Length: 452
Image (tube, rainbow, N blue to C red; front, side):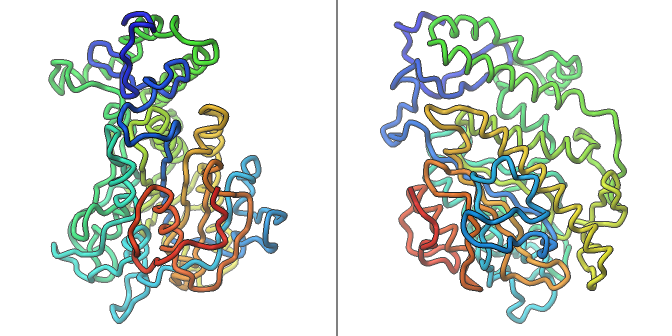
């Protein structure tokens, strides 16, 4: 690599070594050439979108704040978010009409996932003739994903089936996916952290066979060792603040890689009838955190600007024995009003929210200009079911986080009951440059959202 004055530097340049390619974060010292070269990218720090799905609804009495506006107190389930309270809003009153039966009978969990990002009612079938609609992430990717290596990234923690019936006659494809590139084609998610890491940071042009590449991984040879010399050369041409940013970024990538290659030895009991696939941590918290970390790194390096993350398949019956919850999550969600089951569901809900809180805190640590990576990312976190026992699709548990450079947060916003969740997506898509007139049953922006 030559001196900075001689660089013809594309934003999508990489530090390269044998079998490794490390995408760079935003570095101010590189000036205009350090940003995306394409004319379409006029925003110094582009918008990213993330959609996080949690299964089986929530224990809503512990989710909904009692007060409105910015002075509300965090309810029990959301207290793990106290450090980032100003960086998200609680949205109540939103609904997914397409999740309701509309004559199709049972199957609310499958419909909850299928409609969560599409806003379209799925065709009830256990066969290959599945049909629902393009999801909001894929619509956004048409605009935001044109200039990144990966138009979108789809992650999860539970393997899903793409065929057969999983919920009262609905295809397993509906329960296992929230991202749909077309009305008949879901985007299969990746659940193995190492595979995601390799996809983001390892070159396929290394001349190695799969077996040789696996053997190298088993020796735990850090991919960063192949590019550190290049990083040192690059560092000399950077300003002081960017030198620190590059150091922190390289350390961050190395730390994520170490956590992936050295999973915790402590094992937790898997759920009833749930087999932990080879290659992922047995510790659920570690698994969830690693996937969130990979999303952060993908956004930080502009490898993608759109991602989805399923923290469980629809109707997931995973148990959480490490939290003292032996019963399966789905089975508990059919609580029948039992107070003990309510408390166990709330325990699972708090665990999911705690993983999300950690992610937001990590996103906030990444500086981008005068703001942070979190300021340039809009994140929807929630479920397509309200109460798991009622199987209702109104007054859904929804958080809108991040986006400090785009949307005012830090409030509890209560919308009129049955306000389409797709109006939120309509609002986000407009921010992403989409100019359509309808998404699902969403036809207008949410007026209470204060756009910046």
